[in-house]
Length: 261
Image (cartoon, rainbow, N blue to C red; front, side, top):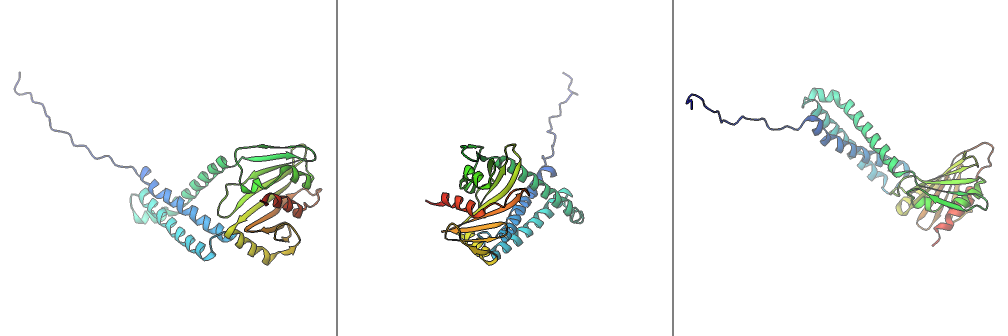
């Protein structure tokens, strides 16, 4: 064997595997989206007078806004390889991207949650149920009885999201024999602290009237009644011009019957 031939067994140094900025940026993007969700929820709490006190909702909103800005800046730093000057310039773009991602996630969640509905015919026809999901508000609506009161051929009841701290919401659509929408309403059910806040707001801007439950008020296209620790609000969204104005008090009485133990 040729002694001049040698084998170099020195190990070749390799660089440690680095996490790319495309992966690392999600450590900022996900918390930023979470802060945006909390910020949006605090605003809705203030607008809808949910169970969180206005002062508490304002504090939560300020903290969420600060967190959003902080994580947006952190994300911009990652994308600019921690260049502070460039990160400040990139913050608006990163913020828009986070908002768009939140909108996409919200849309996908809405698609997965909505779709459950109950429909029934008017007159002597029987009701039928279909769909994947319902909520507390939709369970208080008798489609057949609502169709008779509205004077439509049938009624579709749709659960608008899951029950939450701001209440339970259901949509009601009255349709003719051809399936054309003739009238639309919302049924919003509040309970416990959310009900107290909603009722306090309703009695300040509405007229007391005779109705179901313990007390009732009306204001334009809204009819609100209180029964125990539950407040139910019926709101007329739209109707065709040739239709009479729906009797919201009679519809509320139908809902009240299902609230009875």
